[in-house]
Structures are given as structure tokens and as C-alpha cells.
Length: 235
Image (cartoon, rainbow, N blue to C red):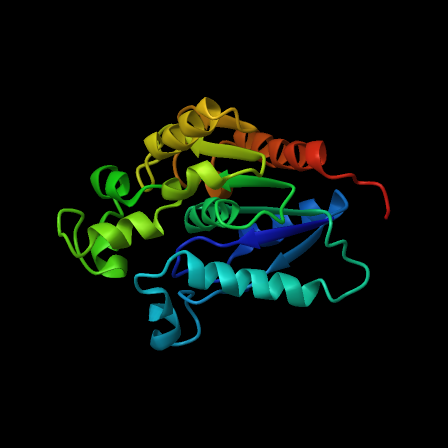
């Protein structure tokens, strides 16, 4: 089975300076998963033009990039294309939700501390200026409204079929928890396979410097969710 891992930011990058990623990747590999990761358009480290390549395009373009990387990796015969799962945090949580609303190849997904609705994000997150910087304007502007709707994963909530686990910290000031509650409620009302875990007292950086018991719980829940929907037996 294969885990597609997506980084946050979106201006971050997978690389030597991101120490917490290596622990998570090694943990997943130790549980029997292969891990595929890449730096899609919008990532840092490749110049300004590449970093601005996701302007008004947080969803489709970067999703295509990470899925292209996955398809390339799946050319290796030891990876099973029928047992795919996906996860990411912050912007990675956003793109995880966007992907499962527009692509149905994954057996399970874990979306962590994500942005799911740009209008809500503008009002509750301390990174609200990303809306203007990355989408070109404000939610009340007529020319921006269709952009925010197109780029918000919540727009595609009716299309989601992939079992989705939502993880979010109660005190997340970067990407407020109400967006996860919106996603959970919408999927639950439709009878979709979804679970929502809210970590009390924790903030946006739970996975990196949060309470050790909550950090362990996050990893255990992620793997348990994946194992519900993909067989871990050798193919």
C-alpha cells in the first residue's frame, strides 16, 4: 500500500530542514506503507516563479503535480496502485480534501488542520492574508467570489466518496477548527464515511511540538484509519 503525503504552506517544501516529516515517514514505512512525497507548484525552494505558480490555483494544478508524482512512483512494480491512501496537514489537509472531492482513486484519506472554505478562513484564521495574496482579492469582491468557490474543497463535498478522517486542534489559530466541523457535518448529513477528531488544548503545530500523547494518538489514528480500508497483506 502507498501513502501520498502532501506538505503544508503552501510555501513550505519537503526537504532536509523539515525534521518532523522524516519521523512520520519512517513510522508509516515501519507499518508497511510506501510513502510518496513531492513539492508541487507553490512550494518554496525552486524560485519565485514556481512558488507563485499556484496563484488562484491552490487545487487543480498542485493536485495534478502530486498525482503525477504518484503515477510516476507507481511505475515501480513493488507499489500497489490498488491500495492508495492520502494525507496532509494545513495546506496539505486542504489539498487532501480537494483531491478526494475530485478524484476517486484513494481508498482512504486523512485531512489534518486544513483550510476547507476560503470565506470562513478569511474570518477566523490568523493567516487570513493568504486569501488576498494567493487568490488576488477579498471575499466581498464580485470578481473573487467565483475564484474562492472554485478553490474551496467544501464546494466539492457532495462528490466525496473516499472515507475521510478529519484531525484538527481545538486551539488552532492558523486554520480554525470550524472548517473541519463544516466538512464533518456536511459529510455526515450525506451518510458519507467520515470521522472527526478534535484535540483539546492543542494548536496548529500539534504534529511538530504538541503534547507527546496527542502526537502519538495522531499517528496511531492515521494508520488505524488507513488499515480499515486497505489490506496490509502482501499482494
